[in-house]
Image (cartoon, rainbow, N blue to C red; front, side, top):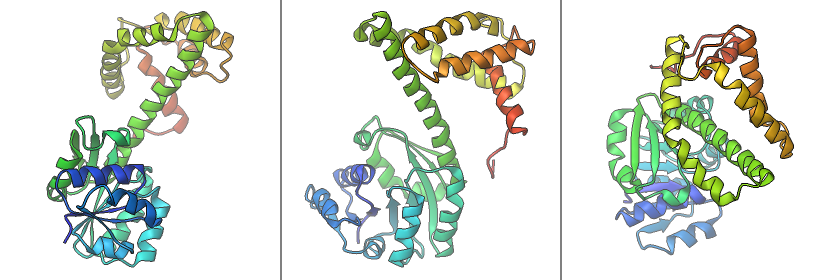
Length: 300
């Protein structure tokens, strides 16, 4: 019997398979395009390809789902008719918290146990110290997953007994990441436009590193308390900077810049009389638009 099953041999699935095999685990594998599964299996005698998803799932007590998304996962499980009784099923596909419930119901309704996982790094980091994965599900199931989390290496963090937490965390982390990506792309364009060598731009980024974590921690504390008074860097200190940066972005040919959107939000807050508050007060504009207080995760 295999130690673990991996369904799907895309970039994430292949990374998970390699890490598990390298850690000495016997891995059962299935992929819709069998050739891709056999390419990965050729790398280690510990990897065995199964002709059907049901066969691969039946080969171990733990199945890691590494398919494209939730609809594909539902389709594969539906078509396979696999016996999930007593098995631990861990979903790694990307998605949102609302996607979790129906798949969890499908697995538990078939007698299985269910967990969610979210890998927060590039696939080539799987199995290295740079791997960071978060999990949601029963603590005892996470403990049972120990040989896999050890193989994944790096930081393997159990967040909560509620599976949806893993995808909620992933959504927030991804939004933060893409804000960074957007900033990087626009800054590269501005750097080229005003004559800053890209190497010098890269060297300048670490200058702000200490401020990133401070902004997040201070800002979140203020949001949680609902008291945004902050003399260190009130809104009045941001508007001139953002006016200048918005102009620089327009000159560099950037349309719909995030800088313009942020400047407009700061202008709105100033018009509302907020002058000595931290920039985190802009979150109140989002709350006002959705017309609701923060919604806690179920089980919190």
